[in-house]
Image (cartoon, rainbow, N blue to C red; front, side):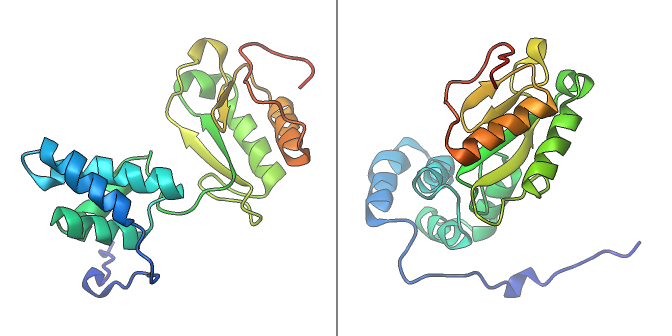
Length: 190
């Protein structure tokens, strides 16, 4: 098989006139974080977290701006963002559905839960609905092996899932009747 190459040196990124790394963010980075590290690259995680917490994702323009402040190559910032699952390179939906895919959850039918979500929302894992309401992802483990299968709806842990229950919760999120708080055990009213 032949190697597939791309001309990265000529890559163009979308930019906007206003910087993503605000003056306040840059000031915090320079005054609070940079002094903590021997080398500026040590503040990379702090800078990425600042941008992501503010915007919900890390645009390529922001990666370039961070690289400029830290005096590192933009490729180092992109490598970091693309390596760690916690960073978002694209905007995510209003609601994040994270299905556990650990061996315990897989064994207890998490795959059917994921398939039910995909069918309900018309998206695949890693995608966001056209209305920007839902993003579906899979996580390696969310620490609920004893109550598998499990998923996070936004920050709410739901355990002992079935495809029907997860679809019912999505219906509730869509019609505004979903109650935050998660479920540690099966609740028949969901």
